[in-house]
Length: 422
RNA sequence: GUGGCCGUAGCUCAGCUGGUUAGAGCACCAGGUUGUGGUCCUGGGGGUCGCGGGUUCGAAUCCCGUCGGUCACCCCA
Image (cartoon, rainbow, N blue to C red; front, side):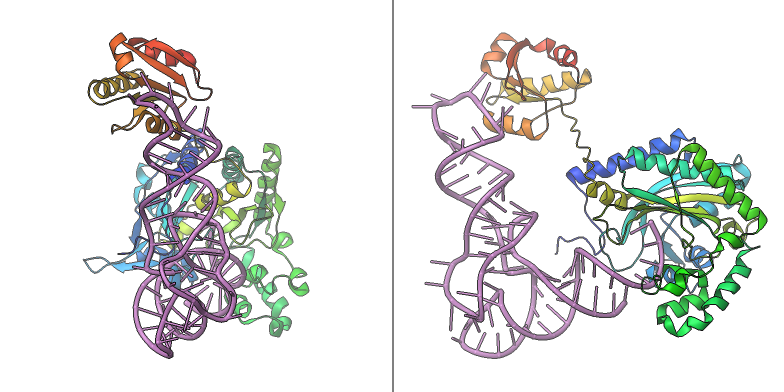
């Protein structure tokens, strides 16, 4: 039996686990600060949900899904993302929900691809969605939330890229124009990009190999082909960001692979010099076409999906300290077997009653070893309890930072520690 | 899913062109007179050299496969 976890998954422990936990905490706190309510949708959904929303020729569907048959013979899929699930849940419960719906989720997602740093088969995302508002202020709110999250986590080296990809009014015409534009250059495109040209010409812009070629850089962008309403919407989003003090860069080449995305598209990208491929840690936009694809009434929506694992990479690259605030305040050391051990157990209990995080050794180990444990536990104090102390009803309180010791009545220990403050 | 590089103790790595009982630093544990951590000294535990097969008198060192990591591409968080 191998102890290795399956490929593309990871065991997260100690400092890394604390770091992740802090990210979960900030996800909840930030979303709630904006009045978003938590939602928990299934970890797996009917495969059809993703096939319909992503299209059966998309990469996600053709090679990245964890799909299997359940015992009733239905095809189910581990969620590769959550927007589809949230919108599905919205449609299922729309009658019970006050409008607009502001909701957020935190959880694990699954995609079967070749793993590398920042691209795992099991990964964690924090996402927010505003469903039911078509206007630009919803877009701004989502962007402001994402910005606040990034700053809250202490990262500074990033850029917010922003674009509008139009809607059903203006995109088709632009798409045709772009196809015509690329036509003469078709033999200068590699195989990948030709496929993109046929399926979705906007995606030629993200081509890694050809994307930098002059004729691609010179191609018309959608910015000045937006229809009136899209242009107005985009202008309002930009004005809103400026008013909120959120810095962004216009990126006319930022696109989306799927057709239900409309208007606003954005990505937060780590600009740290050590950043590699997976530099995008948060991406989102407007998806006004999604509900209809699922067979529901036209319902506008906007949101983002933030990669918590990628966020951790970005934080590490920038040297943001992993919040390793250890809880233990006082480590109670029992010297010798018998009475001291029982007394230590009771003392720890008293400290906990008083709200002082405390722990002790579960085995009789040398005093030396127990002090070492206190050190490893990150405790500020060690309370030593041996024959001498037991006889006098006191403990020896040792401040671990400088070795300063004092004698405290056992019953007064909790009060003494609380008086020490943090 | 495609391709390049890599895989030696918990971690970071050494081990020349194949040659006997595989090493270091850090970490961990224990001692340094029987009650004092984090420094120092001494000692100790811990490795099927990712796994499987092959070549060879002999392989951690060569070959093949496989698993895993990493990087690029596809795609994306």
